Amino acid sequence: MNSPEPFIIAGESIAPGTLRDVAFPITTMATGTASSLAVRVLHGAKPGPAVFVSAAIHGDEIIGTAVIQRLARTLDPAVLAGTVMLVPVANIFGFITHSRYLPDRRDLNRSFPGSAGGSLAGQLAHVFYREVVARCQLGIDIHSAAIHRYNLPQIRIAAGNRKLVELAMAFGAPVIIESPLRDGSLRDLAQKHGVDMLLMEAGEALRFDRLSIETGVEGVERVLAHLGMIEADDGLSAVGIPARANRSVWVRSPRGGVVQMVRESGDPVRKGDVLACVSGLFGEEPQEMISPLDGIIIGHATLPVVHQGDALFHIAAIDHPERVGAQIDTITEAILASEPQGNAERLLDEDEVV
Ligand SMILES: [Zn+2]
Image (tube, rainbow, N blue to C red; front, side, top):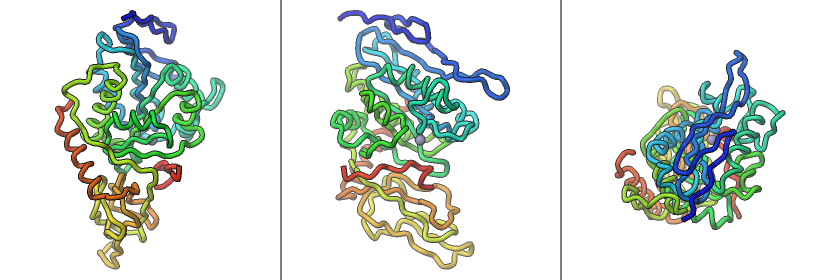
């Protein structure tokens, strides 16, 4: 097999079979400190596609940072076919302030394509897109739920794209959600330029949890193996077929007060099932929250103190929820058992719902 060319980035030449950390200057902060976007490039000894894995495009959604740290330990450019670019923290500003947003209160994931002379968010989006996304054929962008919320590990893909369904199935997260893309998002821009994207949602903002991290690490490795970039490792657990949905609903608290949750993420529910009970400060006037449909809970609030109207459950519409729920249990057990190392509506982002 032909040896690939060196990978040229940030004025540096990365030889096949080696890795390099590069930093793209973004701006100077109010204090005058320079800030830059950190990218690790693993340039494989053999030719192959280029794939990026990014985390914390919302600065407080740090699950992917843990996933990328694990990948950085395990991926070896000497045996890699193609190139992997790791971006452990895309929103470098929100990351240090534990915030979803940037200091200019913009959402990086609504700021693409951005421009060199634009806002802080626009400049960061511009550099991230030009230097990372545009060089790749596939991206895996890792998010989590908002603060005080948990998401069952899931892959979200653009609706109606068979190649993405195939890659999402290879990833092996318990649930796949297909939904239209939103303007200004990274996935929207990437799709327009022919870069395939998987978006992983898992876990809670500002927290690490094992299921989310293991799902992410194994999922990325499975996708790389599916593309022939790494060997299909025996260490990867065999997982079942993920559940698929293209519609989801949020269920909101009927009153303010204190919640006792009856169900949680991963649970199958039938229309009419009790999800939780919300009562007053003395436990008075309890009101039950009822599932409005058959499905699987893919996200839930973790904070029991609620206002009327707070979104407490996110349910994906799925037929035969018990059977699918059992499948999901099998998948999550398989992931945790491994050694630690169309009519679709556009899916709302957490900050638009909470
Ligand atoms: Zn996010």
